[in-house]
Length: 152
Image (cartoon, rainbow, N blue to C red; front, side):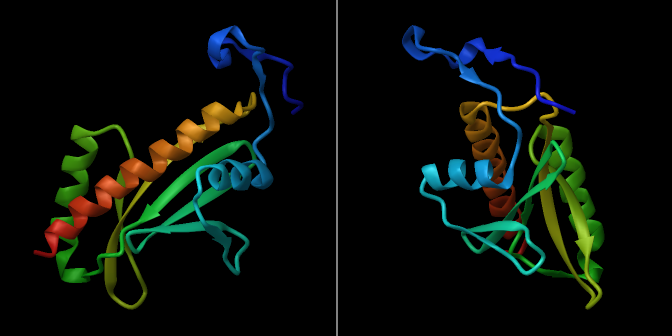
């Protein structure tokens, strides 16, 4: 679907020209992340990945849908899953972002992941994308810090 030629009036700093909506692309993601000084790499599956405090943050695109998925570095055993479910339920009740869930791996380890998902079918401005990425990274880091406290 072609991106409509809308403008975002909120992007008029000091009365300047409005920023046009752009389609969500991997190049735009990389540019905005690089503009913040974040170092990311492309993994073997072609996904854009960054690391903060040892936690992995994936910047995934499914068409026009952006998913910022955080994987906490803290690993737990499958026996800890009920505690992790309780953590996620509390987190999701008390906070909007990221939505937390438990991932159980084939090796029997478990970890908490979080995601911020946004549909950008109509496009996105650079400033909007910067804010979305900052939200995904900063709230993901907060979640990972809280998960790390479970290990203590």
